[in-house]
Image 1 (cartoon, rainbow, N blue to C red):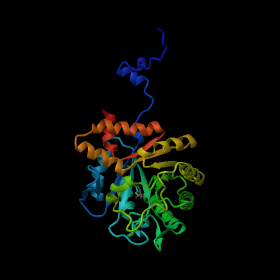
Image 2 (image 1 turned 135 degrees about the vertical axis):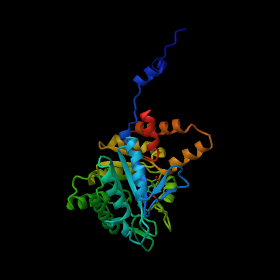
Image 3 (image 1 turned 90 degrees about the vertical axis):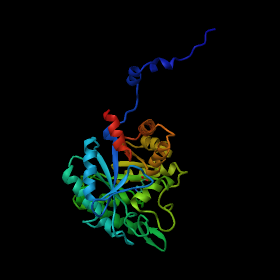
Length: 324
Ligand code: PBG
């Protein structure tokens, strides 16, 4: 008998050989760590659905940033939770708002760390929607104006990258224009270009206190069933001047990460969202899975799908493991 077949196992014989033929890597520089900032002092409020993740008051944020810096993480993304919310989210574009003060503090002490500002209104509005609401509709162009004010105020505070996440049409071009006019033409925009209306954001809404008080976000975030629409969203944002494209969530949308990678030549970011974090934490607290191996496998799958960068609540753990 003379049956011919390929001997794929030749290249898997030992760890050295496997390392030599490994195709995908995760680097510390790939990680962006999300942080939630609240008003007050000495606050490190645990998020019950996200073990290991906290809301920090500014003094405690500094402590956390020391760890982040020591681990060699190069970038953080900040979310602000104001003490007072109102219908138009005015704390989002207040120059002394909680997010602005968080940005200033980090840049003062850690100038080499890139601070990404999440630019949205949902954490700042009393109704929890990402824009201005009239008769229970989220208005597009009216919301854009406030979003531009928010972005400019964040840039003034020292944000290195602006990341608009509210899914209003035209937000990239509006913010680009606003930043340029205010003297921030050098500040890149990391657009949440492809953001699905996902149940995986559940734990984040506890962390950011941003659950919509009526309805849902389906008139602005995307239908999980749609793939071609994701490509249209990405094309718009690139044409409007986005410097990075975010796909969010990550795990159930790796096909979309790959599609966007294949169609665009700017850096692609996968957002490994809160629900993806919580599921791993819950299973590992039960002793059902090997937490470290599962995290690394998931993050490498995002890179393999084509992501250049990953926003992840696991950043500190992973940076430590990469160091080892
Ligand atoms: C909106 C925003 C959301 C997330 C990041 N930015 C939530 C939403 O659209 O409700 C979710 C991130 C996560 O789940 O980790 N400002």
